[in-house]
Length: 119
Length: 279
Figure: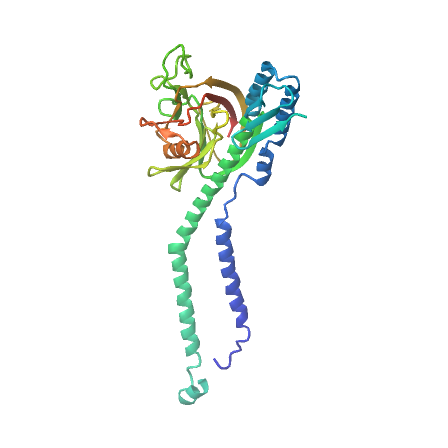
C-alpha cells in the first residue's frame, strides 16, 4: 500500500457525502404534504365586501326608520345570497335619532359585530 | 512492509489488494441484498403512501371547488387531477339509497299544527319520519394502501379499510350562531347522468351548480336532532360523530343521533345539488 497515492480519497468521500445528502433531501421532500388550501384562497374567503355592503344598506335603512319589510329583506337576502346570518336592531327605541344600531354578521367562518351611532 | 515480505518470498505482491477487493465486493453484494430485501418494498410503500397524500390534497382541492359552487354561487368549476394507485368514483344521491349514507334531521314535536321541521313528504319530521338527505359521495379507494377517502356532504373524510375508524380532514361549514340563536346546516349532494362514474389516471372533474334551496324553520321550543347513517361500504360515522360533538358542540341523544343543546330558535337548511359532468 505504501506505493499507492491516496491523495484523491476526498473525492470518494465527497461522493458518499453528496449521495447521503440526496437521500435525506428526498426523505424530507417526501414528508412535505402539499395542501390544497392556499393563503390566497383564505384571503378571498374573507367577506370584506359583503360586510361593507350589508353595513351600508343597514345604515341607509335606519335613516328612513328601518321599516319591517326592508329589515326582513336585508336578513333574507343575506341568508339566501351570501349564506350569512345577519341581525341588527336600532336602540334604544326604533330608529328615532339619536340611536345606535347593533349589527351582527356571521357566515360560519367570519363573525362581525358593530355598534353604530347615528350622527 | 511489502519490502520486508519481498525479501522472504518474493511473489505475494497483491495479497493485501486481494483481501481488500474481497471485503469491498462482499460489502457491495450485502448492500445489494439489503436493498432488494428491505429497500425495494419500502420504496413501493412510499409510492403508495405518496399516492394517498396526493389524493388527500386533490380531495381538498375538490372541496374548495365545491365551496366555491355552494357558498359563492360560482356556476361552474373544473379541476384536472391525477388519480394514482386506486380509483375515484362518484356515487350520486339516488344510487342504492338502501345502503348509502344519509343524514336524518328531525324535531321532537309531532303535532301537525305546531311542528317545526317538515320532512320530504311535507309531514312533521320526527324520529320515525325524519327529513332524509342522501348526499352521495366522491370516493377514492386505494388499491395498495389501507385507507379510503371521500368527499361527502362538503367534508373530506378518511377511513381505514380493514378496521373501524375514520377522521375528518376538512370540515363542512355548518355553524351555530349564538347572538341570533340560529343553526345553519348545509346539505350538498352529487347528481350525475349515470349512477356511478369512475376514473383512474389523469382526468378532469367538471362540476356545476344544479338546484339550490334554502329553508328557514322556526324551531323555537323544539329540539333539533341530526343523525348520520353510514354507507355500508364506507363508514365515516366516527368522523361525523366527532364533528357533531366537537365542532358543533352537540350532545348524543342516546339513539345514534345528536341534538343541539343550545335549542336554536331558527334552523336554516341549505340544499345544493352539484352536477358532476365528468370525472
